[in-house]
Length: 435
Image (cartoon, rainbow, N blue to C red):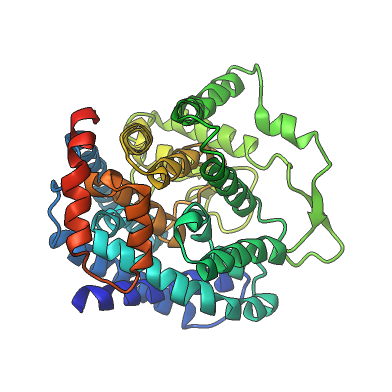
């Protein structure tokens, strides 16, 4: 019962904090927005710490995943501590406690995913609570922030690949939520990309008779190295994908940000100048390896609002923010964890869902170079939950039939005989092959 309350309250608090964040971003004035949002986030963090304290950090994980997760978490904490010592004014402390300090601890949601019963309960609450009641955010969004509904429904991209294993009514609901989140705000590029990627990955289930696992491995390999190759080509001046994409003006939509009569191109280059400014700052501060701590800023000439002395606390790109705060070490640890978890999910699993989730996880590595706001929000909360889920040998050992039963018993908080049989029958297959 305690865990059930923690999960539902965590989801409610996170929805409230995200909603207030995006409502506040549109200039809605209220003295309650900031304190309520902050209190909600810290209540979620307290819940995550409590769940982590009750979890076995080694049980049911491969040694590599266990070590990498611990190293990443330790380095994140070190980054926060460095921020405490380097903070020197009100704005530094505010950013540390309101933003970066929280973000670097959201990986604790890994332990919700790592627990079969907790992840099962969480999925139940999302489908039965968030996706159903989320439609109420649409009219609120029209008078506050048009992106509100789509931002709150951001976890739907994770659930799309689960469709084959769910009851028909849940399948329909997830598809309606996904389509609605796109229609409500058509210029939310990252949301569209995430949903399209998940749908393409979902197609592998229906084409699995024609697609070998070898193709999934090839896609995994391409997604790992594509952003690194593209970054190298851009830095060396040979090819800039953002600049090339911006030359295609075929994808123009009506502006949904309150600028009446304006159109916006979905392929506009809004990233190259940010890369240049962050790289220039890292060079000037010689902070490539360790980063500048959780209160790091970069020099900007492109933003004249919400900046102090032409310095900005982070950008819209997850890769740049991680590099700015925790350096190459932070980026490498995060990358290695994504690589190993997705590799195990694709190479060493007995069910197709694990393989699809592995592709979803590694696709976030690609999006990491395009957007992925580094925030304590629903997006990263559920990313770490699914990372934790497919990190477990028990889940990867299940067959597709057993996974379907796992989702069928949404209200069964503790897996009984089925859970034991799934592990007993298949864990040897995973253990003998897993790296």
